[in-house]
Image (cartoon, rainbow, N blue to C red; front, side, top):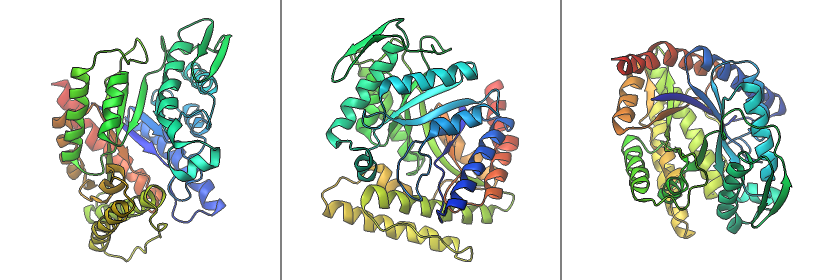
Length: 377
């Protein structure tokens, strides 16, 4: 089982000064993750989602981190693939360049960038997002394997060479963001790894693992995007771990409340999130998430929009918040389910940098070694 961290670059008070600081904080966390034994970092790509994600140019962030590390894998989790965001050849070139410079440490995840805010910033049409994401994946797998590449689909490319060539042969591993059962099935049919939301808890992750495995078992291979099949499932694990378990729970639920309300704002038209005073009780945050979840479900239903796990699962507060033993107990559930990778979400909009760094240290000194020892038996 692998261990990773994902970065959104969230901040409650998005002044230019705070924005610059949170990006530096994310770099510090990512570099420390290598020292503490994590296997991979992931960086999202979002555009114009104020407070929720200021990670708009993740290729720059990942390159900055790669230059300061030597072992940890560098993951795009994910690249927005519809052609309005970026030409697929350009994504292939950037990824191959980074793969070359890192000695083959790059992973590529595909996403749609399907919030209304992002699509209107780039002139992307909702109906194009799924087909163009899949087509981009097919373009990558072909472009990186062929010395002279051309493509004639909904877009015409080449002939020409995609330079440089990636170190990983024939190309870096491919993944896809999966927030619904339908996208899990699609990832399996395409033969690529699944990056799943784990906010709804271990039982929901168990269901997603089952959906993914059943789709793998029944697929024909006709829709594979590459000759290289990747059946890797990575599940999100929100976590804050401190010696003071009560403080960890408080900071974790407070941060998750901000995260949940940010998602609800950009994906479900709910009000923008607010920052919360340190003095508010942990129970207040948990109760607020339960209340907000019910209000969001009602809003989604009134608007005739299906309530997806990404919209409502974020309000579940039962995660790896507390002591290292709490985190170990939660990860043991994920291990029993059979997840291939535990993707830690530590950097949330209201969590102080010192708590993030201490959480990374606790995972590196106590949680990860516990599971490495199990695997060594």
